[in-house]
Length: 227
Image (cartoon, rainbow, N blue to C red; front, side):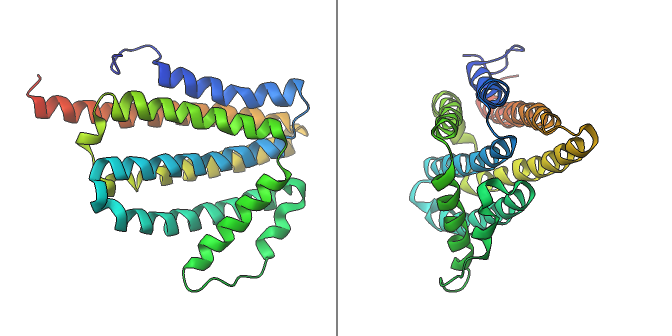
């Protein structure tokens, strides 16, 4: 598959379809819009998982130290963002999870909050939401297998570069949530939040997807001596 083709590639189509599933759920299956925000937050965990895989593929055993640092730092970052999301949506009353007592030592307290948060979300998430999250995992898996592995992008990057990539997505998603909440107040309807999130997130996903793989393609072409 030619990643430089101007149309949509299979990984991009998979991203688009995965992002449209929540719209169908809210409009036709009475899903809670607050749950969709939590679902998008949970996708950060999927991205973190594939980032770890990419780091290990790119640098092998030399990436272990960076992977451990990434787990603590990214896990804490996701926990803080998740606390904000739960406070905003009051999803199934899970804002109380953030006040749970901590017992893990030192910086591991961030991982403990992260663990409690994930456990709490999964305990109340409807079965349909879990399937959507699996669909999102599949879409990222397609990109990982076809592009990162299949097209050899892992040869043109390093664990150090890869570990920074997921943070841009969380920052943009954070802004999308705030903008969506503003629309809820203005339109007096949660559908504004859903549309804002889906539009911004889909555009963001495709933009970041194209940019990351375009950079990898240019680096590969430069090393091969292609014009």
